[in-house]
Image 1 (cartoon, rainbow, N blue to C red):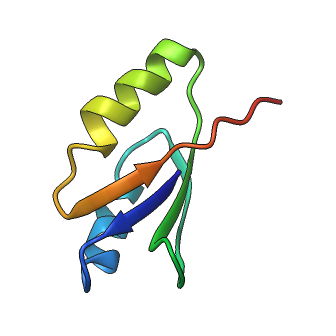
Image 2 (image 1 turned 45 degrees about the horizontal axis):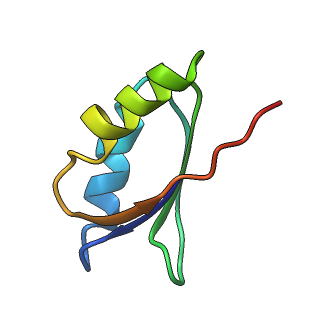
Length: 71
């Protein structure tokens, strides 16, 4: 997931994302997006719930883009 957050909030948002068990990797980046987060769920329904009820409800997020990858 590509995440854009409010200016200066990258570190606090990074810390909050790392507390979510499904988030496996989280990186602060420079450029169009502030954070790249990789998360893993077992089903598409679990992914939808994670995105809508845990990640997008975090304070200071301006926008997200979800890139769904399958192995």
